[in-house]
Image (tube, rainbow, N blue to C red):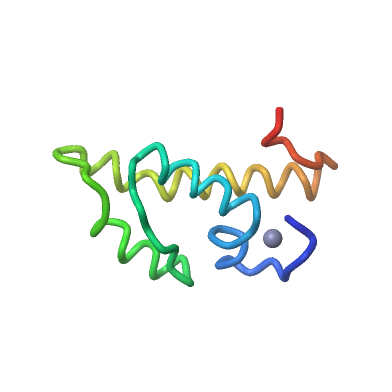
Length: 89
Ligand SMILES: [Zn+2]
């Protein structure tokens, strides 16, 4: 997606510039200070251990999927529709 690193899932969904930007935005909104894990598996395993979500456990669990779906759509727009940076629109 960024054309700077190999497109492996850990890069695309966590460490790519667009992914970092999106994760940081969500973590900031949610008031969570967190060091991003190296892998998507580590992220999923530790995601339920962080944050102050009260009774909204189900809602909390959907956040990684929502972020990854958004990144996947962005990646496909860039790869197949020639859109360069639809996050800015
Ligand atoms: Zn990248």
